Amino acid sequence: MNFRTLSAQPLVEQMRNNLIERVNLLKSKGLTPRMGIVLVGDNPASLTYIKNKRKACELVGAQFELHQWNDQIGPEEFLANLEALKNNPDIHGIIIQLPVPEQLKHLDLTNLVSPEKDIDGFHGMNTQLLFKGCRELENLLPCTPKGIVRLLQHYNIAVEGKEVLVIGRSLIVGKPLSMLLSNYNATVTIAHSKTKDLIRYTKNADIVISAVGKVNLLTAKHFSPERKTTVIDVGINTLNGKLVGDVNFAEVSPLVANISPVPGGVGPMTVISLIENLVIACEKKIKG
Ligand code: GUN
Image (cartoon, rainbow, N blue to C red):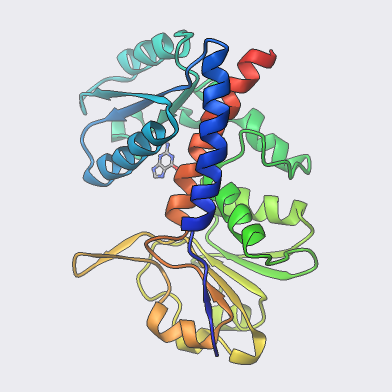
């Protein structure tokens, strides 16, 4: 089958141009969007993600500051430092880069950032929007789900009435994504590590979204060409020093209608959605 590669690049460029205009408008009103990222320790994967976020900020004319704290920092000092960031009126969006070291894991991390600065979209006040049926993407919704919905829309892949399988039930991707897609009238099934007979589900879905983080989780045996499936690969894994997703692209692509690449698919959509959230947070500050 001739498959289509759902590259993020054209959409990212379009979104970036829109964001540049919005940032310029904010600047003309005296506000420059500024992102503050908290990193505890020096996790190499986190440093790579942060580098991408910094670059994305700079490309739209937004500002960025990294607050890198010692990996031995105790909860009290961590909370005090964070309070200062929350109270800084020049910072419009805050991210606590995950994962954090053991001594901080008991903290209610997703609710520590004030909802109006929560550009990850993890705070209960923001995730609640999804429970209430929100599908309006100009809200502080979690970035990967937002990016995936925009990618599907860009390639005219309808979700209404479609069977969508989401593999993974994380707070960052699987759970909010399932809810958002159901708000768009998809019939959503959530599979996870205890799901029996995954093939039964992948073969019967119109859209399969894998957010697990396991190399070769999905291979040729999971798909039938007659189903004309769309595959969205959220996985970020390394194999022999290369970045790969959860899906074996070479095996699966000839069997499906649409497939997102890794790298160049969901990753860039997540980053541009984060920048969009920063701009939204800043715009809301003006609107009050
Ligand atoms: N670590 C990996 N992905 C993410 C993300 O989307 N947000 C935060 N805060 N940390 C992460």
